[in-house]
Structures are given as C-alpha cells and as structure tokens.
Amino acid sequence: MSKINSYKDLLIWQKGIILVVKVYKLVKTFPQEELYALTSQIKRASVSIPSNICEGYGRNTDKSFSHFIDISRGSLNELETQLIIAKELDFITDFNLYNEIVSLIEEESKMINSFSKSLK
Image: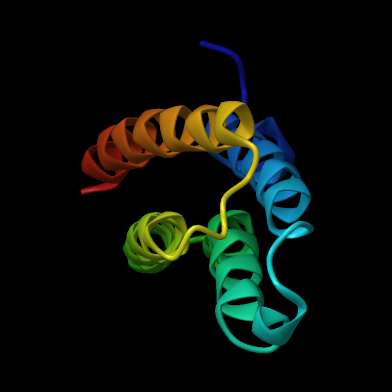
C-alpha cells in the first residue's frame, strides 16, 4: 500500500472532488427560483464531503478523523436525498449526468464505510 502524505492522496477525497464538480454541472439547469434553496443545499452538501475528509485528516488522530468521516457520510446521504427530491420535482434535465452522480454516490458511500471501519 502506498504511503499517504496528504489528504489529497486519499481516494475518498479525490472521488469527493469529482462528485462536487459533477453536482455543480447538474444544478446549473435548475430553476432560477431554486438558486438559494435546493440548489444551494445540494452544492453545500457536496462540498461538505471532501471538505470534512480533509479536515478530519488534518486533526491527526484516528478518533477525530473518524468523527469527520462520519460527518462526510452524513453529507453524502443528505446529497443523495436532495437529488432524489430534485428529480421528483422534475429539476433534473441531464439524466446521464444524474446517473453518473448516483453511481459515484454509491461508490463513495462504500469507500467511506470501508475507510471508517479501518479507523475504528
């Protein structure tokens, strides 16, 4: 296994960044009146995922890192729920991108769960 010198070396962080970029592209087509409502919440939840991984890494203890990984998992679940709501409200127009994001969420969830277990 390769040595981790930075949070940037963590695959869960890298996938989190990819997820953020895809989410931002998806919400560009949401209705303007949702800009400060669901769109904003979706963006914040997506950004929270890699941000909490980074913050936890910087705390330098497994216990603290584990706590921030748990927060990241919660943000991932929040993002998934918000995207389901957006789909139900017919805000999603790019279903290929939406399906890519759903697959990334599933993959990231499995990776976060596995990583979390390694810290405990």
